[in-house]
Length: 114
Image (cartoon, rainbow, N blue to C red; front, side):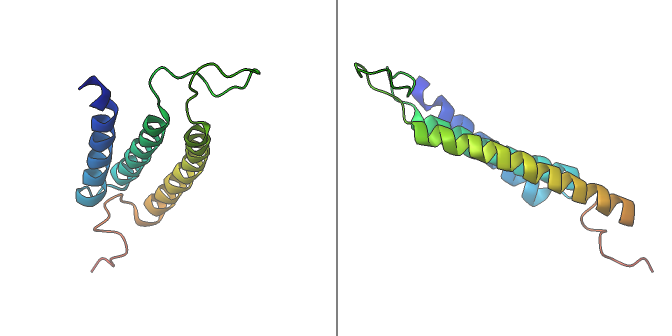
């Protein structure tokens, strides 16, 4: 049961993020939901790389034990860097939208006041 905790956390992060993206109308909350989904995917990649009783994937000559997978770790680091850049872009767009429309409500954006 204890080995399933990371997978439960992945599902919880992704579901909470999907809830925020689908049902919330505040643009900041939608950005937070997208970030939660990204964190869930990153945790899933790290969880896939885990092997019981493994060592870090650093080669020191003779390999005496099982090593963990290095590719998911590299993918996760790349994903984190890309995620930070996308988060900065999303927040700058939210600031621009707020300055233009005066609201963060997604329902009121783009509608002309009568």
